[in-house]
Length: 80
Picture 1: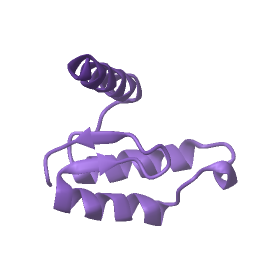
Picture 2 (picture 1 turned 90 degrees about the vertical axis):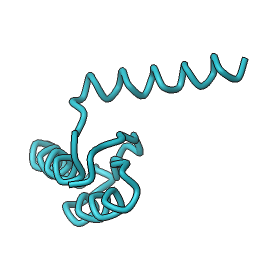
Picture 3 (picture 1 turned 45 degrees about the vertical axis):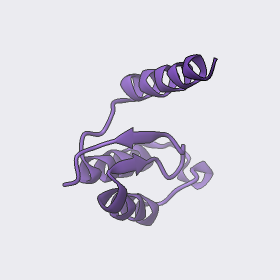
Picture 4 (picture 1 turned 30 degrees about the vertical axis):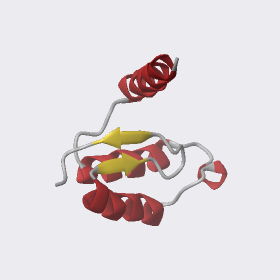
């Protein structure tokens, strides 16, 4: 049962990452984050700022996982 739950979580996370475009590096994640902010029509409703993107990239360099500051979605990436 536990294995099925883990597989379901991985599948859902992977599907969401594929649909949104998954970052392949910490710096790529920060860039994608900043681009999404600039594309937003109403930036005041977003849960993050460019500084939040930079903070997520800095944390990513330590952990190897980029966590979207607004979404909380986690992507394992290369540390560069």
